[in-house]
Image 1: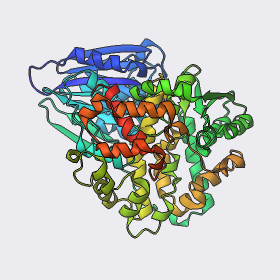
Image 2: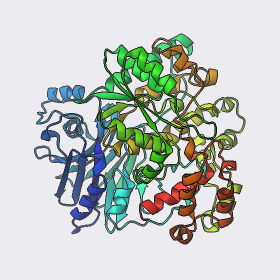
Image 3: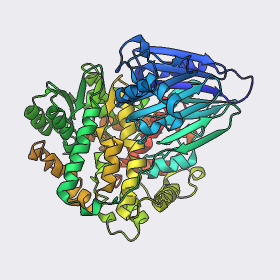
Image 4: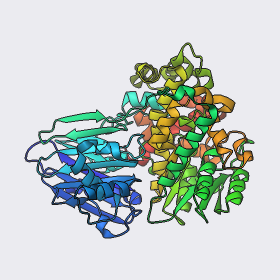
Length: 591
């Protein structure tokens, strides 16, 4: 797990700027505190920050160059089946000088070409340069667990694991992208790839390879798509059959993510998903598992912790459990650091929770498993049941998921940013694609392949990596995700959601954790903005920078600031925090 960066010259005679690589690496130091390297040759320069997880020796230092094969690579992520691939490659005659997964990628690319990604189980973003041809190939994993941002600057293409790293290298158009702003304000702060909030930065979509030829021509190829619906033979399966298959697939996913040369812990929220991961690890023979939970004080009658449930799981499986309690007096000063850790503005209240939790967890372990993704993959959200028989899927989805409709958007944004109803048009186009015929499956696919990528998964990556902590997400094992897409929607959304997962979980974890009311990672102080939190927001929105930027109509901001608790989104977020977070993020990153 690391931070990667690079520059690829797109015209003859232009050497890549090593100083830009150094600047990007410096900005990503937290992602890789264990090592730093830069490689430059011809039209390509790569940079790397290393977090040592697999092969702790310097043999796996990056950028990695194999002179015999004429290949160089920078890689962020973890390949869980790297040992199996290594054995296969040795059988083909390849010889290895390191014990890590990075070198496996180099050999696999040489042996099988770009299609080697089809063989990978894991999370990854990489860039591979061919010395002799001058070709460069960039890639991202199927579910977008690992980020990869792109920017064109004066005859070159730069890339990095974080958007602020690209900004730190200079030369970026930092103007606000109006379409992205519309998505941010409407589509629950999700800005789908390839856009970002800045005009000059794009992100490589998940499951995509980008090839850059020596003459600067580029081509993208999507190497994996997710299709919903039954496969031949599925029609004969019972509910119990599906439970068996789901549990077996999750068991494999959890065991795969134990591959490491350091201990692996669990972020144990007390919910079904992280509890099930903990139970499966114990079932696999892991003892003394380090588990971690975080809680905040109650605000406005809304509880800020779920310790009672995480304690049940920790006691049942005898984990080495750590309760981390954070009061607002600590959360407020750390908000700036949390916002600084965001590669893009992310409005979810639990960002600060993940940030503070990660800072504490990193004192004990370098790798954790986390339960993100289960709600999207197994239908755990409240908006899925109404989609089952929807006659107008786009409207029904927008009504429950969008933070604002287009009419409110027109009253919120400065007129120069209003434009068309981009978020609704995006959903219409996504729902029209083949591979998901039923309305509920259209929503599940969109959430799994777009919303999940640019909200929960990005949150986990950004907040854990800010502490030099690697987070692994077994619910996003691509084989498990493909299986879940075949499970009939009725078996997923029944009983308040995730029914098939809950029933399978009864064989592993206590019923009181399964049958509890649905929870979340609560940070009430950012939903009910009061006192010093409200002062922070007011100062940011009234600052000179905000006035000069003028993204929002003053009368709209006035209404939000007058009574913030009356302005809550359909997904129970603060509209005031959403606009303030964007402004705070822009100010923190000096754009």
